[in-house]
Image 1 (cartoon, rainbow, N blue to C red):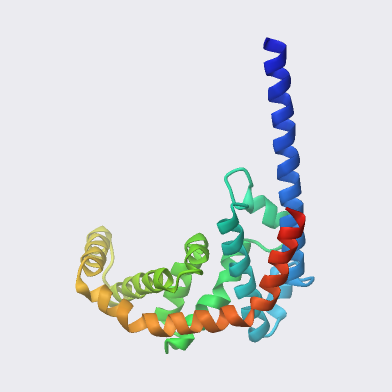
Image 2 (image 1 turned 180 degrees about the vertical axis):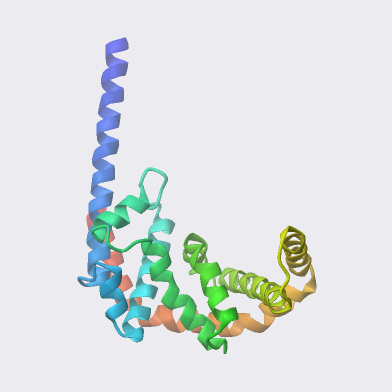
Length: 222
């Protein structure tokens, strides 16, 4: 009886490992198709802004799709997997890849180069998983961008007035919390949502061709 249980456990462990290897191979093939030979941050930065944006959207769209199909799970070490795909030369791949998309969205909203835009980009690139999860829902993306904008406004005030230290940091955090709990941030969301949804729809349509090919590959392999 004990031998049967051990044998069954060993078989199940082997099957899980084999399934994981198949999933990793599938994901690597899909990302190779997306990145078309780009294997380092240096190579990526040499591309035109238009090409960077195109790859950025493809990457986010693919990650979002993989999450929705359940291929992104706790068993897969995404950090190491992405490093193996890009030869460990991409640094934080997710942060690098979401930046062009965020920059484009902010430019569409009229944000020019400067502290606020740089802060919002930094705020959102430090949360790549949130950006990826929000890609299929422009309402969620609007909330994410709006919160980053509010945080940048509070930071701008603190920066311009030269406030610093624990006391002022506490006040800044409380002020940010108050703003998020009032109609203030809702007003920002309502003002930004139409533009953000329009931008995301346009970007999604522009990359739908390769997305359809990738989904086809997934169906054929699964």
